[in-house]
Image (cartoon, rainbow, N blue to C red; front, top):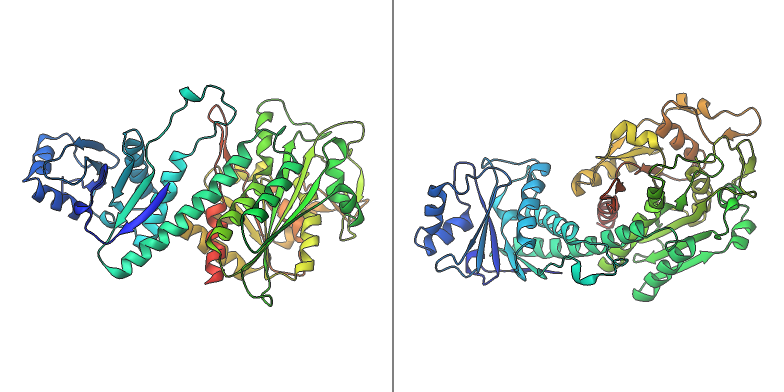
Length: 498
């Protein structure tokens, strides 16, 4: 898919389909008015007939509008001509895109960025959101389908944004560049998440990292084997993978786009490629969705894919702890005590609380980079889904500045996060009579106590934790990885690079 800008007025651009807004009082947008004038009042006549009222999300496809340079004109209802919320804006955009993709249009001009006002968001933001929405609707995961002829294919391959003002031209060009790179990153995260666990193993993730090194400059990828992980004394990490035949991998991807003297930003991704719960076995219902327990790792790979394509002037390290969590005679048992890389001992009360065990050793490993900040991303707790649902990631941090930067990036990207407290009061829930700590803190405040556990391994740098258990995928019959929080993480790194 190509996204381009032109310095002409939208109504003058030849295209298979032109998309513009109609408001609730049946008022045309500026582009619509120009088309109406060129067509000698044709659009006004259509509005008078009442086929479209301007109600938010309504669509009306008009072929062969007289004197138009577009083969089709797609009118989309936008409600009242006042500032929209981001959610309403995206709802309107998605209605238009859904209709567009069901036409034979190979290219389209979209004017909704200029037509619609969304708070204080500029045309760059609106165009980038349109591009992301197109990417999400255009996405399909069909590599395991054998009947390729039956698969739905879309004709659309090119989208144009038009603006005659030079400053806006540059802004829209930037939106096209960032938006396309984001789609590529989101697709990478979605593809990895959607792959079955018998394909997307820790070794497969390692190959994906090596492919990134091969395809782009300034990237170095390494994958430590089980023997090398043992040499690092990562007892917490290895306790998770003890029950499986599939060997673990500690995958490190270094992107050096900034000066050598610049401290890197480190992204740590939980990569449990399948989570049965281990000896603390999960219920059978929906266990197939536990292939998504590596979506933290997928989001790190997706974010790296985006920023490397953009060649951001920044240094970033991605650390992925990849393993399977399965039961067997060799598996870790509830009550076992292990020693983490940091030297702290952990009593494992529940083997299904494994994400924090792989992450804690990765967070200790991250110290060697003397990072500017470390962010871990994990589908960590069911408690997060109970607390926040499927709308927002949970955020905990030991650094207010970092937390605010991530919250601002989440609002800007419209990939939202919500901060939870990380108070000392919660730490005592992790007390163990036999070890330095337990790996669970009881039924109360499960998302917070999981973050409290991780915080004990992050005392030497600014750190934030994103629990993405509610947002990483959609479950049920139409299960699908979301690609979140690639937009949030990318926006945070763009902000730091600037």
